[in-house]
Image 1 (cartoon, rainbow, N blue to C red):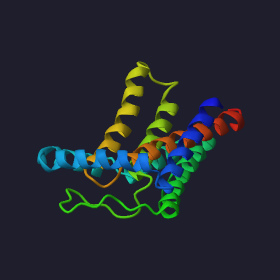
Image 2 (cartoon, rainbow, N blue to C red):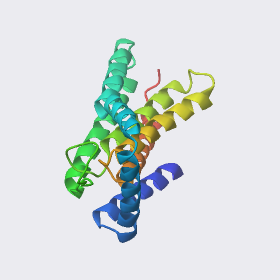
Image 3 (cartoon, rainbow, N blue to C red):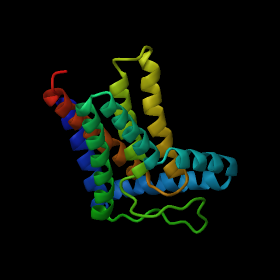
Image 4 (spheres, helix red, strand yellow):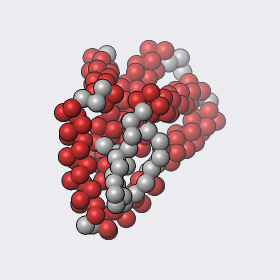
Length: 202
């Protein structure tokens, strides 16, 4: 419960700061964006690698994995877990789309862009969805796997790299990415609390 409250407060603070165009946040966003864009312009190989990563690890890749897993669990007669996965996935999508419309933040604009994206900037859908999916998959795999530290590292590394590519490619600000991570973490924490408290026996 404490972790959930911390994540909720953190995600709300970042969201409000972006919505209110809080000066220090905008300043950090601009400095990081300018620095990474300059790096991208001089390292075309990194841009190609980042573009491949962001194209592969896009939101619908993770959604497809979770939907397939939910259908498999339904076939294995585990409807509660399947519904929990689908509900978490759907809520993540609603939060992503809804906040993009509500906040209405423009994406970074460049005279010489290295990549392109459409829609609102906050939150980063790639970051939110990848963090949500990795957290869900890690939670479900936790009782079944050994060397849990390896799986934990992977579950953190994938969203981190995904978020970095979005800023590196100049299609998001760093606060968009951090906001996406925090919203995903708060969502999964809340849904885990629901699961723990209301999961049917058997």
